[in-house]
Length: 284
Ligand SMILES: [Fe+2]
Ligand SMILES: [Fe+2]
Picture 1 (cartoon, protein in one colour):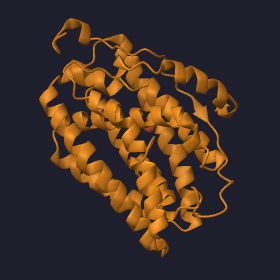
Picture 2 (tube, protein in one colour; picture 1 turned 60 degrees about the vertical axis):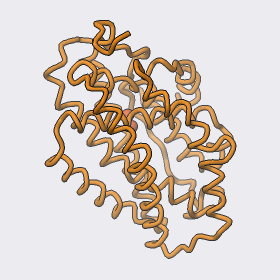
Picture 3 (tube, helix red, strand yellow; picture 1 turned 90 degrees about the vertical axis):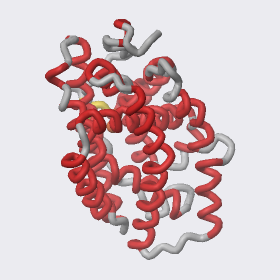
């Protein structure tokens, strides 16, 4: 199917994107080295969480730039629900980031850095490029979400509140994984630009930011990483079942000619985890 096919110019979302609200108490952390007693891995997850409020703010803004150009009612409604979900993710990550600051991390400093960087990007980048980058980041997020829902042995190492935050965030990332993509296809539809942004984001910006942010947090906290901790990071990312190794096929699929996020149907995972997480959902 060509990317200009009419079949690709409608929303191909498979799931209902539910605008939920949740409540988590982040009161089960007893040490800054909360993940496997490993400072590097703990800082890496803090860095990721600290990047979400600014990053998700940019996802929302870049999609909303095209809101008026969307004529399909289904996609219009999905954009509204996508905005609700991302805004609520930001809010919950702000809560846990505050707790990380109390534990001795400088999540607030990282947040300020990301906010300034994205503000600058707003001025310099075209709307097409901003949306393309959001589509790329949304794919990476959805692949990480899939990994979180399919690797309980990794998730078990988090304190329960952080694990549940990630699992809830993950089901919603999967629910709305095609929204930015479908907006891009309907309004911009330039795969060359998309692939260029993806390669840069996935191979350079994302790993570089994660590494530098973790280093920044550890340095500010005065924690000197041991070789054992560094080896633990290597295993967690590149070892058997590691975050980057296990996700390679799904990461690569984005570059196939007619890729769509729902080519990989992980809707059954969402159904399963919605049941597990139901106690944390606030009923309207
Ligand atoms: Fe999100
Ligand atoms: Fe998202």
